[in-house]
Image 1 (cartoon, rainbow, N blue to C red):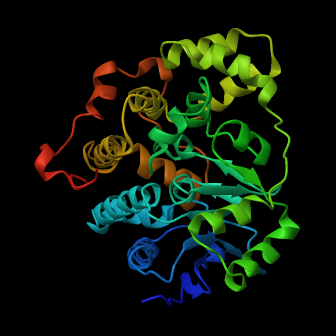
Image 2: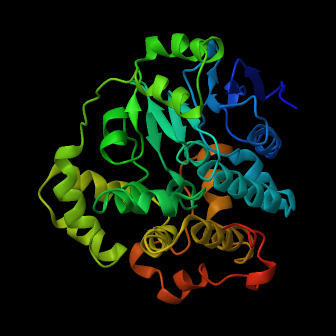
Length: 363
């Protein structure tokens, strides 16, 4: 099985399996059906000797490229989380299994990360053998804005950014461009926007010796990209290395730099509870392998949607941002200073015994 159409277009072209995410009106946000289609085709191509490598891109309303993937389908998450639809459980279990497969894929998987690459889009690109950004790339893990946490392995890949960049990106949800993504270890190189189509087309027409040859061909087309935020590294490390969210925000608010004050103002808009949970997530994940991190995040998702009845920060955050669009989430607790350590710790208690965990099979 190598041909798919619909929201996931998959085709073997020459020696390369080529995938185009084709849900442009939703910025290629991942639905459960798309997760299943991606898993199906990747498992098939993993065993297909004709496939030397896999390449994935997004599409926009004008055609290929322009937007990679804006994340998961948050309207579905709101509806499912509000009504107790069990497919929400399937979505996260299967999405995280897909993320794990990509990180451990047995052939080079090359992600063309043009345009928006956020949330679930990071989940299907960070495990790539080659992560290609462009001058249009807008990369972020913005989940704290909707009362969630940077999942899809976010604890794993953000905690491995240099210094305390991971805490900064996870807590604020700030967006970075190509040069900073490379500098922070979240991309491998930059391909100019106007070179993408030719490189993609060549993948289907050139003869390659093996998968490494495919990867080397794409890498040979990459160019330098300047990092705009590298100068902030000392400030990022100074503040985001502090003990807790309260200390980080207090220090930022007491600082005399414009960046620090703006960053504090951003944090004050996020879910106070999830800021505390996310800081704990990133710091725990530094000592975990990917499978362990994904199991932890699967536990956390259950807590986000189901274990505080009528008090889901995530359902409320999505309501305020994407459903009612009033941008006035009613967070509970209301203030960063009011979050108890016991409440934070509860997110890390697994609802399952180890042998029955939905992701028990990941290694």
